[in-house]
Structures are given as C-alpha cells and as structure tokens.
Length: 183
Figure (cartoon, helix red, strand yellow):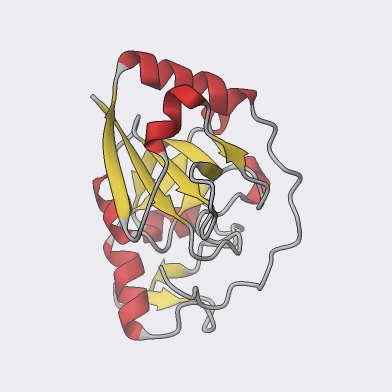
C-alpha cells in the first residue's frame, strides 16, 4: 500500500524541499522520511502556525532515492547538491555555510536524497492550498511527521488534486542556503 508522509515545514527557504528547475528534491532535513519513503510514496509539507489546518505548501510522489554522492554527480547544478564524496571516500561539504556543524552534515548524508515525479508533484512557493474535504484527514499537526496508508480512492483523489494545482512561479531563494532553523 502507498504511504503518505506528512509534516509541518518549520522553514521554507527552497532547500528542503528544493524546487530547482521544476524538479523537486529532498536532500537535506527530514532524515526519517528520507530513510523510509520509497518510490510511489507521497510526502506532503504543510504551513506552520496556522489556525487553519491542512494548508499544503508542497506535495510530491517519490520517484527515486539515491546517495548524496550520486545526487551530486547527476545534479551538481542544484542548490541542494551540497555534499560530494571526497578522494578519501568521506563526504565533503561544498557550501560551508549550509548545515555547518559536523552533526548536521552527518544527519544529512546518512539518509538518501529523494527525487519526486515532476508530473505529480507541486511546490507552491509559500502560497498554500487547502486540502480538499476528502483529504482533510491528511493534514499534519504538531512536531515530527505522521504516516498514513492511502487507499486506492484516496491515492486517486490526491493525484487528481495535486495535478490540478498550478505551481507558483519560482522566486528568488529566501535566505540563501544557510542553516535551517530546525529540520
């Protein structure tokens, strides 16, 4: 059965998720989701601090996962391709300002990068869309992430709804790479 991983974005700088060039990726932050989500699963990010639950900022259907080294080799031009495998086999940080501590880097590279299917994924660039009534139970609440098994009808409704949304025009990255306030 397909799973939906839902969480509240504490910080949306365009790095996690990263929507560069119409391809959405999750290469940093959310290590547990990156470890357990498989192709076909969904990840949904929701707006924080809203009185109205269920305001979604992005959604993606996982297409593939890969190591950070492979991701940097295949997608070196992306903003979130910030780690590469060095000559000694260890990861190197390409942007010293992004997740500057060793613990942050270790947390990032320990889990794979998720790439999302561009045909059924959307990044709304800070302009949230409310979940339709039939999917309202998927709204994230509280810290951490939640997991739901999607029925065939829920999966069809989610795909229909996500593909009906118009992605927001890319904006200049807010805040640069820098470190997340909280992953």
